[in-house]
Image (cartoon, rainbow, N blue to C red):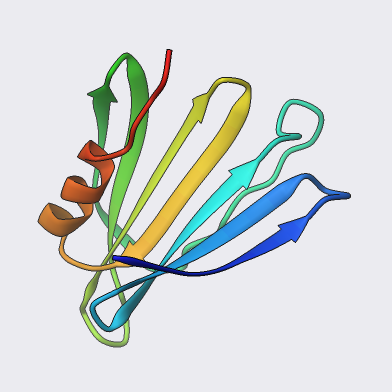
Length: 108
């Protein structure tokens, strides 16, 4: 996986980090103002699985979707950590997505 670019909205305190993974794009959203305002990412595809993964004491909600037009799998993860809200989404097999999730680092 390679870093592609970052878009930062300092007024809204939201960063979007884009990574290239093989021929796919993985997007990592970081929201610093989620306690003051609500935001979400809407995925129109059918949810085929939802579960929670505990990683170093951080509960990560993972959803697996079926992309309507291509039948590919899209995965998302959302969690809060150290006063920030995180959301990660990418079109890939859930086993590959879980490898990425399990390699997230949390400092104490």
